Image (cartoon, rainbow, N blue to C red):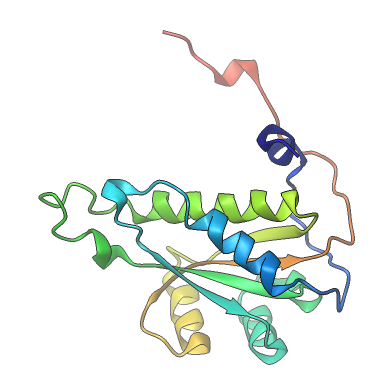
Length: 172
């Protein structure tokens, strides 16, 4: 599958084949794709928590209002932002770019999932203070949860939404 094909095929999957296996090798490939994105001054302000524990996924599902798909997802990946990785680097030049960097990480996970025949759904946590606090409690951490990504074998094929719109493009 080409990158273009993965981009055009990507959808937010909210129904997964319950109990379907996502292998450790597939998870490794997702995380390898994630860690190969560019970041401000190569600060790489991210870490990951891979969750297969059904009880933890259920806690997230019942706490975060937009993670209902975790009921059937095979696993979740939580992207952890590390803004402190950008402090003091090249006179603080990259300071504050962690949201863009973690967004790029998340998009690579979504596209890698499609390329592997998996489905995924990006559920934001940052910058909502209440969601951050709830995720910190569930994960027993003081780190900064950026988002939760539900992963599994898709049990739906949503129609495309959005797409190219010439009216949104300006040429100078």
